Image (cartoon, rainbow, N blue to C red):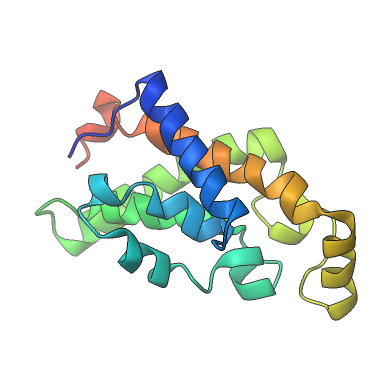
Length: 163
């Protein structure tokens, strides 16, 4: 599987992910579905898989949907080998740790409620989030960061050697 790190391809994926998010897709759907070709899965399957992961695990304010989408991409990427289950889990965990380190270095958290500054798991918090436009103003940045990291890093020799 080839994960290209060319700027044009990355811009295309980030633009597509932003467009999907501005449409009817949540953050997890927007992050994962742009990698359907590399993962060998149809976009509809990935969209259905991630349907409940937006707004921090279905409006619970937990793990950011863009982060969850990236985790799924990393697991699917690691699983495309003939490695045993323990090796796939180990490789996925190592990739997720590297992703988390980068994401948290930019945003200080992977939790939706901390990233957005409101607790979307409560009625009042969700109303405030919508009133303030936090989904439109903040979530695209998390999606772009996740897509760019995946695009830039999964072609590196040290990652390729793991899968």
